[in-house]
Length: 194
Image (cartoon, rainbow, N blue to C red; front, top):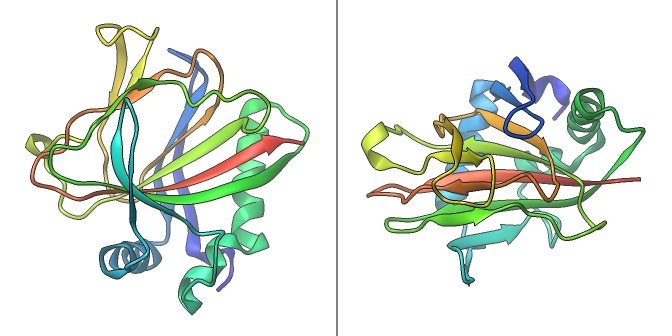
């Protein structure tokens, strides 16, 4: 599968509360639907529980992928995503260090955090893949001015095939509101500055 699977439409940049950009359509619609169907059917999920979140997840970089999904890790798609991040954040080069799938179920949420773990990860693209989402189902991505849960700056709807790209820093505070009667899926590309 070629990079024709990527649409990358409706890209809009913002500087507050930290530098990021939004994409209204990441993949061609048919491919986005195939990824979502795979997420709904695969048995690769395992539960992770920490002090600030509970979610199911798995790495797409561990083991073989179904034929149609292997293009997610192939150079045409990875290079276009890398180039988009480099252009928006004025870095010289980025290496892909992770591609993970996340699933939140009813009652799951993510507390305020910034993803910062030092020099191992520098940039992230979080792609939403959600079927028939409605506002009363929650799962909003929230961006914060600080680590205070009351200091919300932006609320992002988890619309199917949309995304947020951001530079990971000590200021990139974000969270996910509680999910209600809904399976909330994301595909997360993680890069590190080379």
